[in-house]
Image (tube, rainbow, N blue to C red; front, side, top):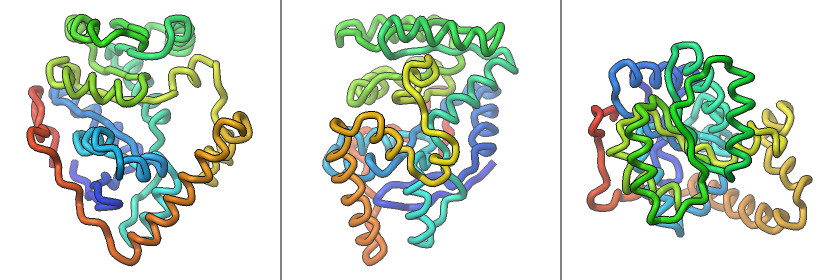
Length: 267
């Protein structure tokens, strides 16, 4: 299956629907070829310009998807349209359903131990018989990373979901990602907390309006007000600049891999 890519804000995003993504992942599972999934929202668009580690991790992804509705709207304004928003948590949900349906195994890496236990309990209730090959909390020391990577590799998992924060996630994947022997790797951000029932996701209508950020702001106004004000303003300015003078693609750093030890999935 082929899909076009659109150059936006200096990185290439895959112009895919959710069904395209799931089909690509199913094919990767069948062939044991690796797919590293990444998502881009307005905050990352702003942050990656000054954060080389984040930027490089996005360019490392085999599929880079528009998580934020604002990114989709910007793509249409810039006449480099993306078909739809593909939220990381929705991909997580669909891949869990795929694993359950086809008997694939998963590994969960991230969150506090208590949250992780609660997440596993909820997933087992929702997907009876789901094969959880292993799990580990996200609050491990750097010195433990090699041991955890070995556990993931030995688990034989078909999918790895990482609920750990940046830059720890990028460092872990950059160091061990190619040796894990896991076909599907997906960093899911705060999705563990949501699926464990600790935090609430915005209602569907808010998601459709691209207002999930506002829903989170209502929950934590003091912590998020100035962050969102600065980020949203910067994103609007970057979109205006992109309309006038489109950014060239960022140059990948030396040594950035373009294939996979499990088989290349690049187009």
